[in-house]
Length: 326
Ligand SMILES: Nc1ncnc2c1ncn2[C@@H]1O[C@H](COP(=O)(O)OP(=O)(O)O)[C@@H](O)[C@H]1O
Ligand SMILES: [Mg+2]
Image 1 (tube, rainbow, N blue to C red):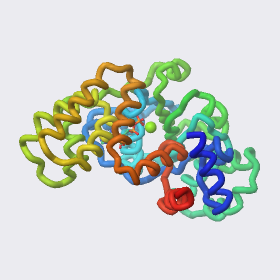
Image 2: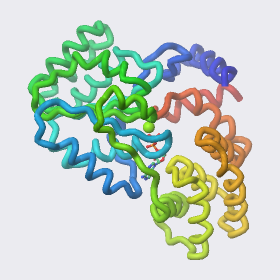
Image 3: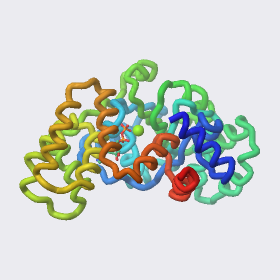
C-alpha cells in the first residue's frame, strides 16, 4: 500500500490530479455530503426512532450518537434520515460532514459552509464561498456562526473517532434553544461516555432482511430463482448479517456463475471465515472480493485504498492513476 501511495503521489505531481488523502499531501480531511439516498433495506423502525428523537419538542440543542461496528450501516441509516423529506422540512439547515481520523477543523468548517450555502435561500453565502479558501479558521467559524444564528439546524458528523472534532468546532454552532440537533456516528462505544446516555445502538439485520439485501444486490430488479433462496439465506447468515459483508459477497455472486455449485462454494468459503474475530472477519471477506476479481481489475481495487472512506471517487482520477501506472 505504501508503494501504491508513493506511485499515486508521483502521478499527482505529474498530472496535477486532485486526490484527497491526508497521508499523501495533508489535504482536506472531510468529504462532501452526498445528498442522494442509498436504497436501504430494513432499518424502518430505526429510521422512525431516530427521526422522532431528532424532532422532539425539547428546545435545547441535543446530541444523538449512533453507535455500531464498522459496516453495520450507520452512514446508510444517517443518510436516509438526513434526506428524509420530513427532516428536510423540519430543519432550516442541514449540514453533513464526514470526519476522518486525521480531520482538520478548517475542512469541517468549509464543508459545513458549503452545506449552508446549498440551503441558503437568498444564496448570499454562495458568493462568499468563492473567497473562502483564503479565509482563516476564525473567519470561517464566525461566518458559519452568523449564518446559523437563529436557525434550526441538523448537523451530522459521520464517522467520529473521538469527541475532539466536535469540541473543536462547537463554538461555531450557536445554541439558540430552537431544537437544533447534532448526530454523530461512531464505531467506538466508549465515545458515548462523553456524550451522555442517549446513544442509539445499531443492531444487525435479521435473517430475512439479510437475505433481501443479498438478493437485491445480486439480482437487482429481476426475479430471482427460487432454488437460490435456501443457499442464499445460508450465505447471508454466514456474513453474520453484517451489511458490509453482505454487499461484498453479493458482488462476488453477481459476477460469478449463477449455479448452485458456485453458491455452495462461496457458502463453504464463508463458513471458514465465520469463526474469526470481527476485524479478521471483515478483512477476510474483503480479501475474498479481491481474489475473485479478474486480474486486470485487481490493481483498480488496490488503488481504492488511497481514497478516504466515503469519498466520492471521480472516474477520471482513477483512470489517470491506472493509465499512468500501466
Ligand atoms: N440497510 C441497508 N440497506 C442497504 N445497504 C446497506 C444497509 N446497511 C448498510 N448497507 C451497505 O453496507 C455498506 C456499509 O454500510 P455503511 O453505512 O457504510 O456502514 P458503517 O457506516 O456502519 O460503516 C455500504 O455499502 C452500504 O451501502
Ligand atoms: Mg460509515
